Length: 303
Image (cartoon, rainbow, N blue to C red; front, side, top):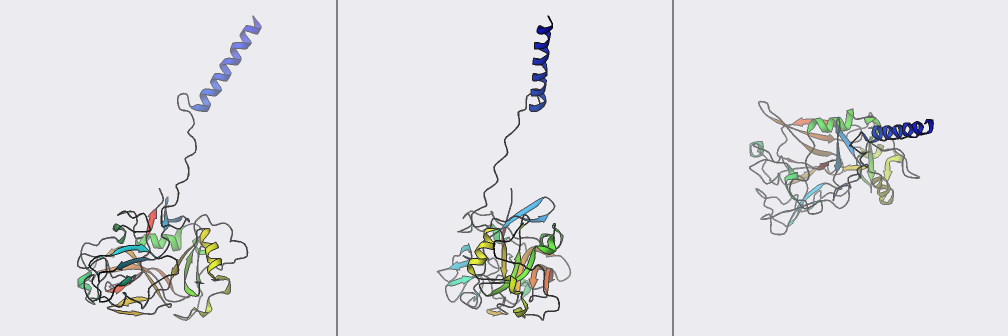
């Protein structure tokens, strides 16, 4: 009789343990596979708000035309250091989305209804007001090629990325990549540098505006070194200058990157991430610079 009881008591314990383990009728779910990085994205994940991460696109936004602006194809620059600068068609815009010479634009005015996503040479800020559209509404040929996959960071997200996320002060720094000056952002999960490389975080306090000669040698990367950084998720924003009308200024001196935030006031202002050299970096610069053609770097939310 004792053996009979022990057998059933043991069976009951085993069944009880199984019930605790699987919650009765709810067996454990296997770990979900990690989301693959989207087409056209750098694989690093960056926090831009509590519980919200994004992927950065692999290069600055570009628009290219072969029929003088009757139609445009949107894409990301091939490399993170690439920009158009004083080349066509940045300096050939002759009206609302039209250009006098075919080519590529990558400096866009504020994106509102009277112009074609900021491809406009008007210096009248009134021509850039209205219900604004995000550049990410467009299908990006090398970024999934479907509309509304990408978006522009807002002011608060730029601030969070630059100032608030965990260890933020150690995850950005001024740099030169392929001899182009700009700012590097490291992803949230950055742990160690690729073998043989170094990185000095932060800006250069006291550096003169537009003087990139003070960039630490540790932050100067050739193409192969940068590919190693990029493979670990690092993002680079080049100093692509800005456009006013058809004239491009301060190439390789300043970088202006639009946010999606418009401040409603008597004059109205647009916010953007700005750097004026290695010593002057502002995540929430704002002014009524709607007519100024500025860089756009799109992001895609991590799902």
